[in-house]
Each structure stands twice: as structure tokens, then as C-alpha cells.
Length: 175
Image (tube, rainbow, N blue to C red):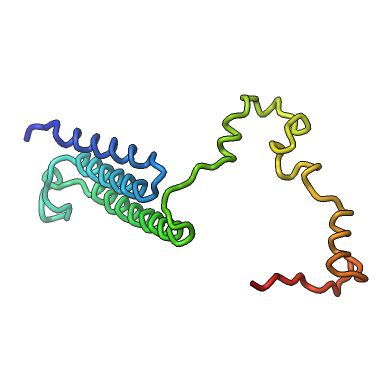
């Protein structure tokens, strides 16, 4: 049997289309791109197994006439992984649709703000030199002070010390 160029071209086309679809903001296209990548991987693994042969069962055929079972096992594993991730992506699409009535991932303004900052090495970064909006969440001046917490507890529960064990649980507003 002579090798043809058709199968590698098909595999390459599936990989190219899959990567193109993965880079989109639409979760449905991401799912389709992932499915194309899974199918391209399955074709690549099967084509790496060589020509078809007899079943790899001892006593049925000579070892040189048998097909290699390892690529088939890899393909079965790849099918299971593709199915699991596809189910997860479908659940994300469904949840996104139920919450915001769209399945397109929006532009994150925080990502844009971080990308617009000038480049700086992490070793040279001093949190005190940053703009307060750019400081890490646990930076000392971003945390509420003890006095603020005490004042808030006194407003909520007047006359009860904040370190009292009998402090009533906070009540959530009922809508």
C-alpha cells in the first residue's frame, strides 16, 4: 500500500479549523473547535498505528500480521476525554445561557486595564508604588481596619461586644 497525502492534509485541516474555532469568544464555537481537535487527534493516532492487520490475539495470527493495539487504546482514551470535556463545555454553555441569555464570553475590563499597564518585572514591583486600584487584594491599605469592623458590628448589634460568643448570626435580607 502506498502512502497518500490525503490523510495528513485532512488531519492538518481539522487541527487548523479546531484551533481557529477555539480562539473565538462564542462558547458554542469553542465546543465545536474542541470536537474538531478531538477528531483530528483520533485520526492522527489511528494513522500512526500503521496498516490494518488481524486481531492481536495470540494463536489467531502471526505477530507480524497483527495490528498494533496501542493506538486503538489511545483513541478510546481520547474519545472518553473528549466526551467528558464536551459535557463540561455544554454545561457551561447552558449555565451561561440561563444566567445572561447569551453564550458569548464578554470582554473583561480588568484584563484590558492590566494589559494597558506598562511592562515591569515582578522583582522590581513594589506594591506601595502602585496605584491603589492596581495593588494586590491583600495589601495592607486595602484591608478594613479593626476599628471599621468594630464600628460596623456596633451598628448592627448595639450593646454586644464583638468578641462575645453569644453574638447573634448575621441576618440576610429577604427579597
